[in-house]
Image (tube, rainbow, N blue to C red; front, side, top):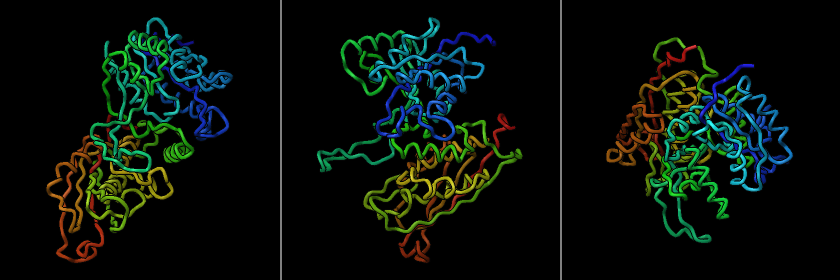
Length: 410
């Protein structure tokens, strides 16, 4: 038996949910994505992160199934894992996990097994950001246009700049989290997540960047999305160290083009921005031809196929998605293949919208989605020539430079 250092971090993997909305005839965490269950994929990510005590909170009556999944995922770290029985509510289940913590643990991460494809790097980033008095959550910016409604009436807009979509794992200092849980269980209040419970006790919570891969599997469509992603990565949980093509060591350049006709629904989305009052472009997602050309350029540079292969109509999970989703996922694909993005340049041809006033805003949005890689976007008219000149649509050309990450070269 290999003796491992006793970690000061614990990860409570909450897997006790019934999965009513998934409607798969079994507790959600034990439903298969491919050859493995949701729980197994979640645990693969957990054990690929830095060593920690791992506590799986299993549905009552399914502790043996959870033990088998833990054994398979843990490998030589099996001594760090334990299964406990969950309660009737999520808070009761997390409390059961807290009761099983080792004495050396000072930082606790609470992770939903339903976020089965969460990258190990996200788990490590949350653990590293927790302080003695502050909790940490991973979060993504909200990209959809939000409205406040009453019954079937739309009564006003919601400023999405002030909003973020929370993910897991959520990390906390152990002592304060235990105190917060004791107060919550005594009050009878059910909080929507652990950060809300922690904040209700007066403690600050900050956020770090989340990942598009850390989506929650709740509905059959979510399960299908997870299967698509695993198929694209060769059947293994997508990870930066796997499924890399041969790398030559030289920078690589890719060219991408995209064309969309006007005629979609809603507002125009272009270069990662919404353009109210402008005619929308038609397409499988939001018709953002600038973002799509950039995706094609990046995928082509890395030798990873094209946008249709990864985001086309065979992938309904991307219907209606905006630039941030496409670009963040493309960055993850390049990272998994061992490439970093050097820079991207795109030019769109069209008479509208008037772009110069929002150029800096668009470049900032696109750059942020690509992990900070420099992005430049230019626009030109065609002097009335061709379909862009006639106002029938927009054409885009993009060029991308990618560089092999020599520190991870195989």
